[in-house]
Image 1 (cartoon, rainbow, N blue to C red):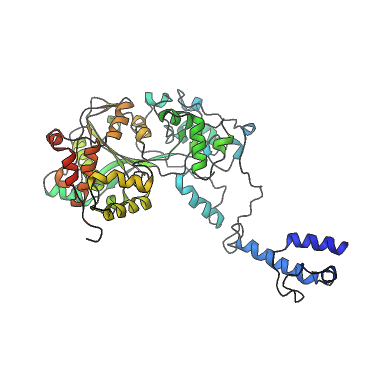
Image 2: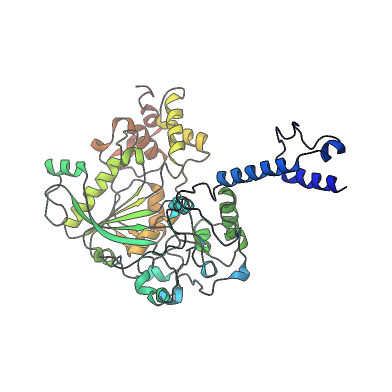
Length: 484
């Protein structure tokens, strides 16, 4: 009976197959006599080797040379409201102390009052750095000398919980607003960083050579570089407000985000008391041309382009779309406005491929080029929906938040033809006086399919073109073949 008990316990703890032990391939499948004669010492020795091999192969101890991640705490799969943070968030409060800091750091679990963590999608790389022993999981940044060189002061939108729901308006003022918390040891991180820079684009040099722009030594330098203020912003979502923007319940929003991320954030379900979420997505960058204080002065001319990321065009100059040319045109208009005594703004969102991602975008390119009849404007959106399941996932409802954070109440020139962007901006209470289309001579040859399809679908059309935008027009626009 004792042998049988040992055998049963051993069977449950050992790998299903043990070879070359007592010459028996299936060492525990024989008769009781065979089990009694079994070499337990050799089996346990092999189990020890297997256990050591398993430890080396798992993520907790693989990189012995760089230092193991040997945490002393157990793994917490989720938390519950009984662990509520003593530091609460009152979104839209009249001052930062009443509003409360957003605490999404990992060094003080009991103080966390938000779901998710900092750095957006880059938080995954941070986890690798910790696992590889390259970064202390309890590391805290030294924020000395990191304060903004330019002030973006509070404005009425900061105190309206419906105006800004996808970013923390106080995110760049952590040291000034929550200095007492920091001195007490509370780990609070900025979600906005502001700096100054010179940006250089070859098209701006070309614009100077052709006389469209002139250097002034202040906004535009003689070498074609632009002097700008820029702000990097991480997403911080106030879930009740985000749900309201999309006219859905907060419960629906939480459940869908939990399910569609593969259960990545269980607190979306278990922590209804936590209303703030830092999603693991790319953020946005604001580029300001001219004095930042002019943004809150409606007497100053304000030019704005809201641009969604397109790596292929913006960085590498792909000619299948108008993204980089339109971005360049927006920058030119911002420079010109700033030189004339106004202020220009480029808001650059990380929404690659209409937020469908670059893999999906390239698949759509292939489908468009290979379909019967070739790449055509009349099937432009249909081909996207066939591959992605939806034509566009940018959903511009959250986009105006950055404009409200800046204090913009009026846009004199909106450098965009997008009906979704225009409707979102004006629907949020910001006036738009003029919409500026991309000049025809800046549209790449293979991009006419895109721009013609968009104008036919409802994008802004200049008055001189409205008469020709019809069914025949959209059928005439075709792109080159895939292998051309």
